[in-house]
Each structure stands twice: as C-alpha cells, then as structure tokens.
Length: 62
Image (cartoon, rainbow, N blue to C red; front, side, top):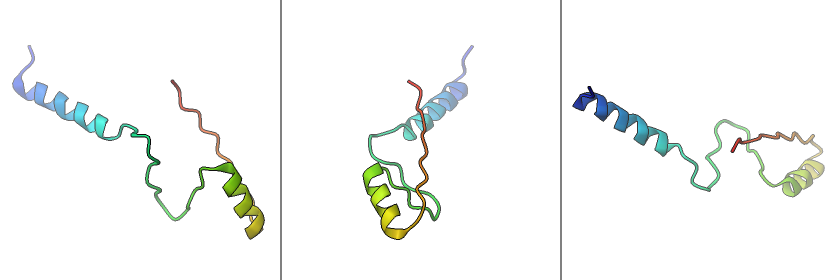
C-alpha cells in the first residue's frame, strides 16, 4: 500500500527530474573552458589564435 509520505517522495523525485530537462537553450558552461557550439566559428577562432581544434562528438540517444 502506498502511504502519503511515499507518494510525496515520488512527486519530489519526479519534479526534480523535470527541472533538469532540456529546454532548447544551451546549458550554462561550467569551469574555465568556453566551448564553442558552431564549427565554423570555432575553426576560424582556432586558425586566428594558432591553437588546435578539439571536436567532441556526443550522440544523444533517442
């Protein structure tokens, strides 16, 4: 049998999961590295600064 306390915990967990759901906007960057999300701009900046270009391919299932 589900108690009121257990239902309240599940509602809290469900709401916490929704808070981290993607909204379409880019997530805030954490740390000191400022990542670029457009390849053309990042490649031009790498050429201009003489730095290497690191490309991260991240597949999101679904």
